Length: 188
Image (cartoon, rainbow, N blue to C red; front, side):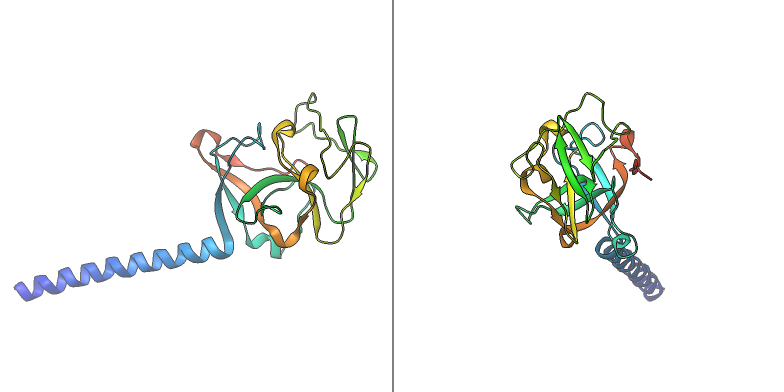
């Protein structure tokens, strides 16, 4: 009788350990290869993303789909690879970018940012891209800007983001619950 109870307890704990190990393995595969959570730090993407929000970033999707204009990406900082940044893609490989009179021009056309930025927002040049000076992205380079143009360290300051630094595309805000929702590309 006591031996029977001990076998049941042993079997119960063995089942729990196996379930926990399986759950940890599934989580690890998802985290390393498919999707990863990231925390927004700072206000560089305000008003569309807020400080301390958490987003799910699709890592595997980069193998099947190119990064496009308007995508919100997470990448290793070109200046400090220990930091991750979240920004909006404004220029893709082969694009010519120009900042003139507070507006962004891509390949000679005014970029319509009205779906995610207030019309009063002005984009100022930086140390990398000067007023009225065109820059062109090369193969595997992207030009990114924060949505909060007055308070964002982005391509205007430190230049292009190499494809190798991109971790993934953000697609879902999951925390806090009041902010929960899909991250939409305004140009799709």
